[in-house]
Length: 87
Image 1 (cartoon, rainbow, N blue to C red):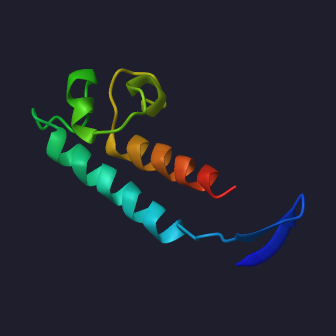
Image 2 (cartoon, rainbow, N blue to C red):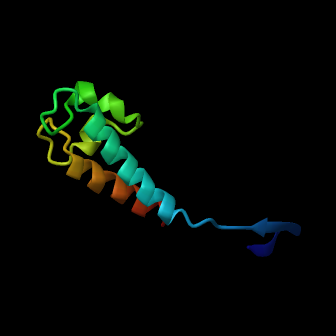
């Protein structure tokens, strides 16, 4: 926590480390993908993708753009999103 002044107004600034929460979120999305794979073919198609409950578009998570979102793509995508949130 830092004490600062902005235009003479006293402020207290704090930063929370969310790295542990971010890792849990990646695991959660990977688990949701396994559960949401209704036909158990090892990937999510665009209709199954909604089961993740994310605002990220299918096309962004489908890293190789093959129309199939695999668990590894989900882990990679959300890990990168989490890493970027730390910057």
